[in-house]
Length: 157
Image 1 (cartoon, helix red, strand yellow):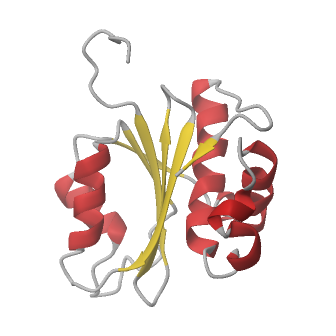
Image 2 (cartoon, helix red, strand yellow):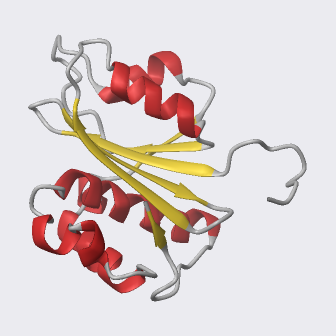
Image 3 (cartoon, one colour):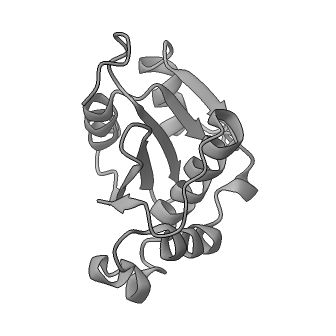
């Protein structure tokens, strides 16, 4: 990889969770135009799985939907980000940007390899959160960074 003037990470993270504490995460690497998708159930109240992934990717931006449960006593991914990743730029996009159908279409069109190899074509309903996160990450990257991913050029992991 080339030296980019000292900036370590080149990842943009988009993250969303549902009421069942299932989390969808998309990590877009600006250097390599690769997209890393994760979807998992957060089993601990400390959000250890999410903390581990955020530490691993060391994002320059974290994209989240608006925190609708501000009056709730349960902790959320957004609260975790505010508490532990306050120095990382946080971008709040409307829930409409976290569209799993749009994410599935984008993945199908942009993926360098056939998405069926990852099982996304068959099981996209199971992976709706990470596809929603992917849609938001790609939308933000295009709007804010001016980076447009062309068809069949995106590396998926």
